[in-house]
Image (cartoon, rainbow, N blue to C red; front, side):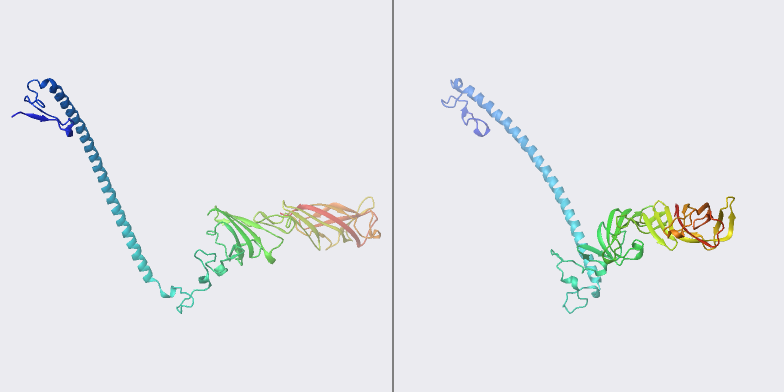
Length: 376
């Protein structure tokens, strides 16, 4: 029986079969090798190349399988982590639910607000009627506990400077210690806050309680933990007004002008003060008399006739005198002079009067003076 080999198409061959006998169609014996030997070799080479390609494809497949196996391993790790996260979330939810249940169980029925008309205790008031979910109403009735708004601005009955946010407010009835000296408790308040250590307040009284559109401001001193003294903003409405000097700071306006029975004065914020009085009467007496060589006589002012300044100077001022004054000419004492050897203090002056007319007895004279010095 002849031996045969078939080159399978599945392995890269052409599907033909060859035998070692002299079969005229398949045999290699006899003259068959002359036409079939080379094709047999060719089929062997093709099948070998096919085997090589299949081996490479198998190796690639193995590599892909390993990669997929690694990916499956990573996925398993991720799933395990997700399961741990889900377990933790479940524990957190269970704990929150338990705490909520405990809290609800501890709430006193007296602290629960019920709907109006429910017949239960603690029925809600006006705030309940406001549409506070997606609406435009306010949760709290205006003015309650000092809250609410006027014209869109929040109303405060006190200022908590450590918590009040930046913004504009209206204050009504705030304590005296929280507002400028002499200012009313009804005002606009502007808060400029950078942080807890940098806060600025601007205070402007309003309505019938305002005084000349006055405005004050102060800042928080982080070193002392206190606010600096209120400083008034100078405007055309208060450039002239009352002034004071406190804690080494000028308070109030920058010019003060006023008068009293002793004369008039003008104060300036730099400390300069001018006091003056034009056309007032004083009486000279025969006491304290000094006769001069040229026949003139110098008299001192009588007791109680000294010049009192309308406001005190911190030290003796510089003065000038004149006996010309707005009275009928018949009462002028021509040639009368005021001796510049006058005695001056911060509160009064005692000038001496010189008469060229000879001795005088209890003679009235009409004087004018101006004194310049400092009020602080």
